[in-house]
Image (cartoon, rainbow, N blue to C red):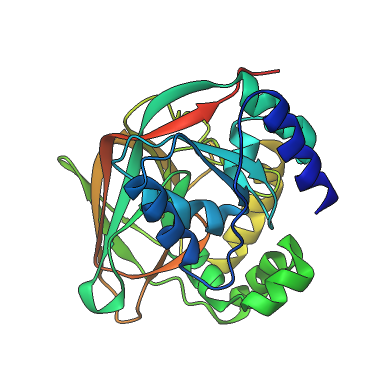
Length: 284
């Protein structure tokens, strides 16, 4: 809280007066962001992790109110992508000097009974990452942070059956067990997967994994750590502005957006151009 107070002081000295509002329940950041839009506020600054940022994005999407972030949470992918430091006063100084750019968002539309359409700013996915995100309990994530995802990931290796689903984009169709729908290079923790994604361009980079072998997924980990997943066997990449995913095995396939559960297949992911104004500091 001390760092947040210091960050607000830095913003105030630069002429940015802030009003602090705390979230107390899931979905509250979306409602707050919508009120900010209705009140025609000049800026929304979100201090939180990927889930809180995603909620705010869903309240600000297709409005003119800019978004800036002060990073916290478990694994803030957007902060890593924008090279924003986790030290809140230093992050506030970056906000002051940031350029404001209009960017595209992703929109995930899952099977109707499993969830509502949801915007995302960093990434989405279907397959084992969706299963991991759905299985991690909020109280465990709060206590253990990113370790909770690692633990659940290894747990999934013993029980996940890697059901296949068909991904169609344009005239291309591929049967996969995982698809990462990237707007950012960063994926989570220290990892980068869709390394040719760019928030400034209105497109996704997609990463597909087609193997059903749990052991091959394990073998990908050293490659992921080393930044050499591109070119690995059964891993494919392409650019797209939309894709449709349909399960072809009997087991359900779950999806996630910005690290939060978002329903199950069938689902469509598409680019929504000119959807958000984002404070983007210059690289250090």
